[in-house]
Length: 230
Image (cartoon, rainbow, N blue to C red; front, top):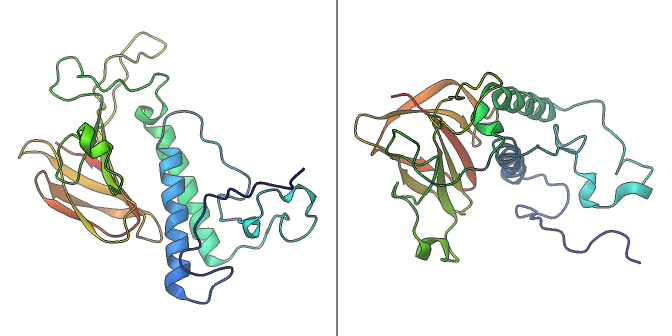
């Protein structure tokens, strides 16, 4: 039989193998942060392979079981960039543990939350409006937003008390160019950016604040997480 799988869903960011181009390496690190962010801010149990936390690649080998060499060995000495990614991964894990909306035991249903005008989850286009069927079926669409409401009443804790959390907006731009995204909700709503994968550290030490209706520039191939402040 075949050793491994030929269907690698991957992209080399413009260069094959190890690269000397700083732009290529920076984009590769950003893509790692993108993948980690979407993993840990999704429902279900995050499945992380040992070494992913610092960027272990196995040099593209998807079946390294028989590779008793540097392809499969753990690298215990870390570069500065690998340490930064490990710290980012640890902060993502801590953030997920702190916010129950990302650990719901139930699926989102896309229906209105009781006593509120918003749904438990909404999928938004770059104009800040809920996506329609035509947009879902448009092949060239590479940018969307996910609004998850923390005021849901359908999840209870062990004492039968509804579990509440903040409301978050996740913006994903898989396009090769910048896209301006209009922040949703009524005019009085304020948002703060907590995470931006264009930054090497991922999380912002000082969150930046923005108003609903404001157009937030999303650079190419990035993930941005915002929390609703009001």
